[in-house]
Structure formats: structure tokens, C-alpha cells
Image (cartoon, rainbow, N blue to C red):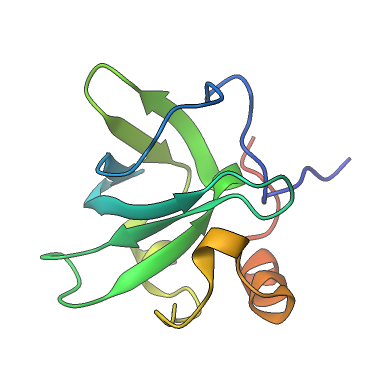
Amino acid sequence: MAEDIWGFDPAHYTVGTDLTGYQVEATDGSIGKVDEATYDVGSACVVVNCKPWLIGKHVLLPAGLITGIDQEHETIHVGRSKDQIKGAPEYRRTEDVMGGPDTAYRDVLATYYGRRPL
């Protein structure tokens, strides 16, 4: 059964936790900090400011890519490498993150990232 990449795994996320400002770690190192997040069912995601790693670039990561959240150290771990994240379809700041990314963009990201990591 394929899992929804647009939802937080309850094993990793405590409802009500604001992830803004959390450091984001890929499987092979840091990629930046969370600028924005939406927690809506079916469109939950975080927007990561990738400075200085990718100067001026932001990426949108579906919540289902999160493999762990360390609240004490305010760190999110994602189940993708830096290269996988760097190669993702470009995030445009015009996307309405707080209402969730639009359907077409969600579909593109879902296809790129695939299902939730095991």
C-alpha cells in the first residue's frame, strides 16, 4: 500500500508543533532551515530556505519525506539525499504554501519523490 507523502507520519510529528526555524538534515548533511510549513491534511509540507547550500533557493518538501523530528535540537530529518532534493522540480515562491501547494505542482513533486521512505 502506497502511503501519502502529503501527510505527517504520527510517529514523527506531534500535532501542534511549529516547525518554522527547524534545521533540516538530508541523509547526507544539512540543507537549510524551515521558512514555512503547512499542516493541512492532504497537503502538509515544509518550505526550506537552502542558504548557503543552494544560494537563494528554496525547496518544498512533502511532509511524508520527514523521517524524524528532534524537538529538543529543533531538527528535521528527511529520507532523501542532498542531490535528490537539489534535483527536485523548482519551487516558486508564488506557490500558496499556507493553503497547500496547487494540485499540478503537488502531482509533479509526488511523481519526483515517490512514496514515503520505508
